[in-house]
Length: 215
Image (tube, rainbow, N blue to C red; front, side, top):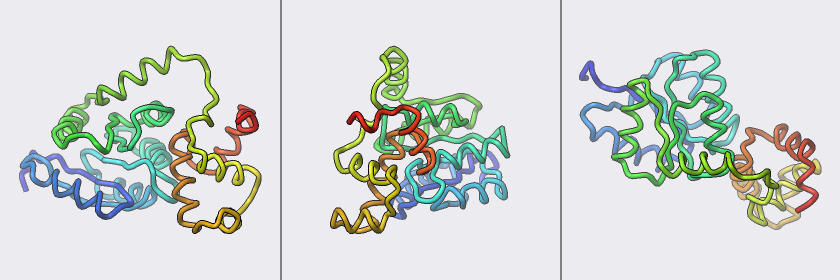
């Protein structure tokens, strides 16, 4: 292995996504994917044991999720260099990731050249935001307060409303005639759009803003 290689910890709960990103990155002679993880919990353990140069962290995962993993890793290892991966360019997700300690943020749909550029810049101690994310963060700072729950699809809103009301995932699945897995998929997407890491934060957001009842 080249001693100048940038060693990457890749974190994503979807095997096909992990394999695709790993294949693309390993094609670069200066980058090595040293380990992969499928959850935030696993990422925390591997980052502490392996001390990777850069961590590519998916945000939308079951369990504690990517945002909480970023927070815990940075708390234990302040110098950690983390790039958040998400399907979103706007909303609260990019800002939250940077606030929690991520040094970069890129969209999963970005070209591989941009991903490599982000890795190199973060490895060098710089920050990296894709142009779309940077623009949206700039404009969001100029927008008046909005009802954050309007960011959700009708199905996500339906499920989140039931969760806030205290319904169990299995009960929601039965009521909507869908599988618990589908309920959880909508739930994780809603968490990401709202910038929360778990149902406790979701309920707190609903209570603090009082906005959910206005949808």
